[in-house]
Length: 242
Image (tube, rainbow, N blue to C red; front, side, top):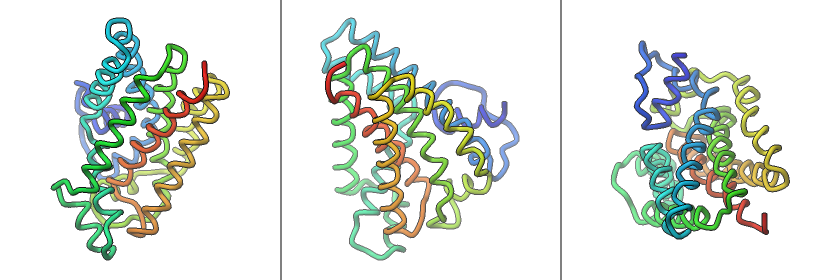
């Protein structure tokens, strides 16, 4: 129960009791629950989409749904995306890129990446149908599962959230956590399987970029992985007709 609460406390703004007796590595020990937390986030977001589409035009419903999605996570992963856009895309040394990513100020690359991601998500949410909207559940769960294999990569810096994650992470979490996104992808048929494949490819590309630019991963990179995988996997559900 402690690690489940830790996962919700770290990944969401839901008013749940704070986990007690925090120890180093607890964010990694809680990671086996991340796909489940993603399912809950996706479920609440889907409910918002279902409700708003009955009242508002599609563009308004899409934006309102995105507002709830971002609010549920406190913008945590978007912050990682912005920091990574600023740092990973900079023409600088590895040390300087890590300094940029740690800087709380928003740069040009970060601002552009943030705006484009939000616009694309809002557009996709506005284009979903009642059937394809179930893809929200898969996108949210799969994105958080993708953090688990990312934990196998070396750390770009010896401290921070990435280091705490790695201290408690266990390799078997990868297989255990895969149950939910894999089941969802199968249940959603061809679109679900393609979405799963697209999300995994997107995560692999992001991690490859991080490895080449800063020689490993950080907590910000985890946030970037989540945002990119959510967007790419959800995008699949507006391809073709349902």
